[in-house]
Image (cartoon, rainbow, N blue to C red):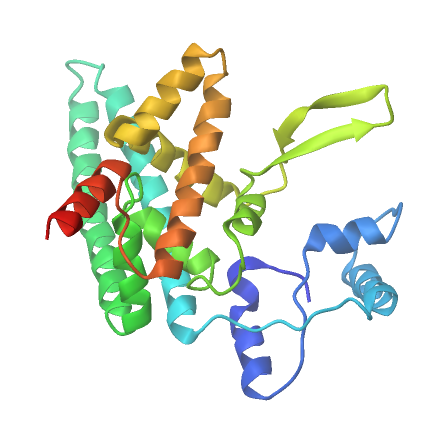
Length: 282
């Protein structure tokens, strides 16, 4: 079956509980395998999927669903994102009409919109509390969540989304695989001797993961001494700031996978040297 986001979660869970084999595939992969096509319908889509299975049956790998807790986390996270997006849009609208002075209708509208914004803020906090309560029901998830928070730049939202997209760090074997999935891994573009460009990230990516990692990188370069020094040195060397931000995104991903593998919180270079000196003195 094709990946369809939240819609196929329960179907995948049902197949797994009944012992039925299934394989999730990227819709774009199936679309490109069918060659040039015209038109679209459910019947045509079913035929294309069947043809894809017949051609790729030797390379198909079986899929497994997320745990019930991860499925619930995914749903809560999606609801939080929708509410957060609406709250930002509402705040922008309130700000845009605040320039209108002396209009009684506008003043009433502002009061109403601010009341709605306060209600949405309460609902947002309630969802975040639900997410935390859900994490507390699984010690492995909760432990990994706390480990991720030890990394400069990674906050609560980033930590939860990393747990969801990595299936609690079981879906990817290396951080480089996740970097490719998130769209931060650079790939070279070369064809013979006439076409050879610099390495660039690919636009096929989990855009939400990429956006959250960008935010994490911008926060980390301000608060992490090592990354701030790295950023300043690369900028002075003539590197473009987007190149440097992407490098920091990859450093954050590698740190995330490292702390989970070691099962110990992140320690900066300065912290590690201080800890080592204390151990030697003892």
